[in-house]
Amino acid sequence: MNKIRVGILGVGKMGRTHIDALKDVENGIVVAVTDPARLPDAGPNLAKEYGLDYEESVESLVARKDLDAVIVTTPHALHAEHAVLAFEHGKHVLVEKPLELTLEKCDAILSAAKRAGKKLMVAQSHRYWEGGVVAKRLLQEGAIGNLVMCRDTLATPGYRRHNPGRAWFTDLSLYGQGGLVAWGVHNIDRLRWWFESEADTVFARSFSFRTDIPGDLTSSMVMITFRNGGCAQLWYSEALPPPGWKGFACGAELVGDRGLMDVDPYSQVKVAREGGAWETVYDYTRVQDPRQKAFSDEVRDFVRCIVDDTPPPVTGEDGRAAVEVALAAYVSSETGQAVRLPFR
Image 1: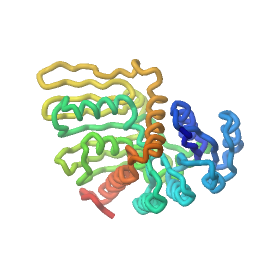
Image 2: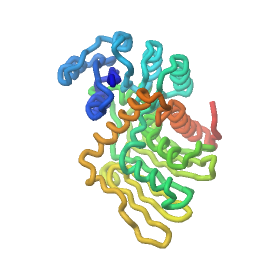
Image 3: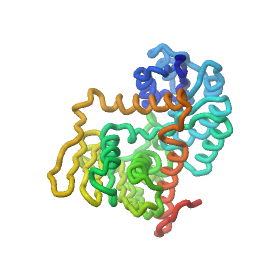
C-alpha cells in the first residue's frame, strides 16, 4: 500500500510533535515542512534534522503534487488561511486546535473542505491521552451509570508577559482573546465527547488576571448545560500564583447516577462504583511514552480516515462546536447573562 504523504505547516513544538508521531504510523510519512513564521533558520534546520524537504512558502508546500495531506500547526488566527489554501490544492487537512478564533473562520474551513471533497480533522489530543480514552470507555460501559455532572479543570501557575521568543503566544490577534479559546477548547471538546451531547447554555466569568497584556483573559470559570440534561463546570487558568495546584492541574471529576470517576489524563483514572471503594483503572506508568502514544494514535486516525475513506474521529464540526462554547463564555462574561447555543 502506498503511504499517505504529508506536509507540515509550522516548525514549532507541535510541528515537531507531529513529525515524531508519524514515525509510528505505518501508512503515513512526512515529506516536507515549511515555516510561515520565517524564524531564523528554524525551518531549514528542522528539515535537515529529519531529512525532509524544506519549502520556502505555504503556497509552494500545498502545491506539491506528491503530497496527499497537510498538518496545520501555525498560529491560531492563521488556521483558516492555511487550511483553505490546502483544500484548494486538493489536500486532506489535520488542523491543530483551536480550529480557528471566530465562527466565521471556522465556517470558511468547513466550506472549503466540503467543496474540495477532502477530509478535515481537528487535533483534539485529549481524545487520545490514555486517561481520557479509559474514561470514555468506562462511560460507554456504564461503569458509573448515566453521566450527570462533571467538574473539569485546566489550571497552571504563571504570569503572562510579552516574550520575543514566543511572540505570537502573547499577540492576542494570533493567540485568541484568552486561554479558554486557545487551550481550554481541549476541555470543552472532551466534555462534549464524554456527555455525548451538544452544549445548550453557557454562563461564565472571565478575568484579565496576572498579565501585562491588555485585554488578555487568562482565567475563566464556566458553567455548561447540555441538551441531554447533563451539566459541567469548567475552570481554566494559565495565571495562578505559584506554586499552583500540582503544578499543572488537568483533570475531571465525573458524577454518574451509579458511581464516580476521577480522571487525570496525564496520570491516573480512578472509579468508584456505587457501594464500592475507589479503584485505580489506569496508571500512566504502564505506558512507555504516554505523550508520544497520544499523538501517534491521533495522527494514525487521521491517516486511516484517508486510506479507508471514513469520517474523521474528530470532525470540523466538533472543532467548531468547541470554539463556539468558548466564544459564548466570553460573551456571557461581558453581558452577565447566560448564552443559549447556537449563537452569533
